[in-house]
Length: 321
Image (cartoon, rainbow, N blue to C red):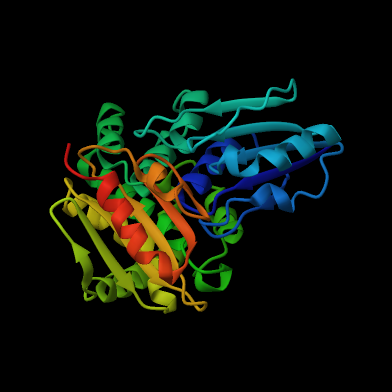
């Protein structure tokens, strides 16, 4: 029987699969892509004689293909923390879904594996901007501050690598990056053996975040801030992690980073205020191609003539209570 691993190309998807394949090694076909490429199950042509593991992509966005593959006879193990829509009931569908704003797919996998590869789960939580959760879990697990700092940086860099307009914008195809990560029980072992990979990501991040910090706000109030980045490769790469940094720097404010696209539309990254981590998914769902979770969400293609409407909707969504 064939096995296919389908996973989001960000830190959470990568680290979730690393944990699973350390615990249960398998020769599998890998299907992944940039962070915003979440309709990944469309790329699975048939479910006949197939086991499929799905990590960190919205069930709501993939439900038609889940139904198609189940009807073909596939068995699907689905682990996620994004909006589900209507839950599909099927004997061959195993769901491990938690919509809590303070969890991520890697933390769900960590629970399943009883913490066997917890350092990877903590790394992913940092990458998903769950800093408080990651630090608390790390300290309870006995990690030192210096080790937590290493996991925080690596999680940020793995997440950074997932953002782009297409795979060519990334420093590493997530499938290639997974093959580099999968051999190690901990992030520390990975850094010892794959220092060159780490250095590529670290230097890229340093340069891109420096450029992002020089951009100006196009709208700012006490409750929200909106920044526009240009149609440049560096901007597409840094949009998500820059949004996370803004959220951590200004915890009582919601943020939207708008990155110009070739077609004149915007790629949008939204972060709810860290002090009340909800509403990002509700905001973006008002616009075509929007999706995500309570604390962090995005829009893949916001038409330029909808920018004012988006800012108005953002003001309404995050106005002080």
